[in-house]
Image (cartoon, rainbow, N blue to C red):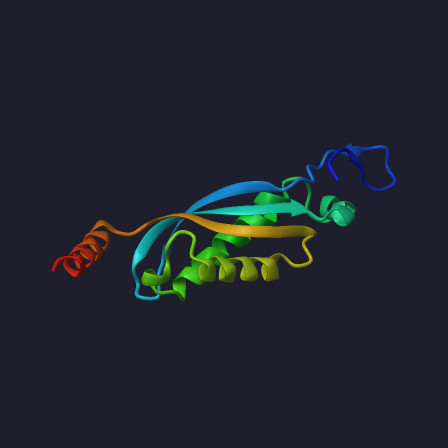
Amino acid sequence: MPGTHKIGMSARVEDFDVTYSTQHEKLGAITVEGLSLELEVAVIYRPVVSELYQLETEIGPSYYDEVIGPEARSTVRGVVARTSFTKLVPGCAEVEDAIETDLRRRTAGKHVEIASVVVERLDLPKEVAEAMRRRVEARLQP
């Protein structure tokens, strides 16, 4: 529930946004074929309301920078490293599900909830994109 939540027994009040937030991560990764690419993913997350005290005392208010961000970047690189570039297209449910599942596993017990991970953008090297374009054009010609 949104609002101010008292953390623990002290008079101190820490303000945690408990609504869903979205962070965009831009990073480079290498596919199973050794192809280097750039991609952007959106991570949708929030703290677990019933665990705000633990989140504050164990991690603190910068929990995205401390836990979710590093784990998200590592998870994306790991999933891409075991995936062929032909399966890496923005919005590919199979890849997004693999990233989301791994990220949830890696952040378990860290008092945060991962709602979703979306691959928003994928940039292949120019020569690969051009070769794919030529292949598609060749199929379309009679």
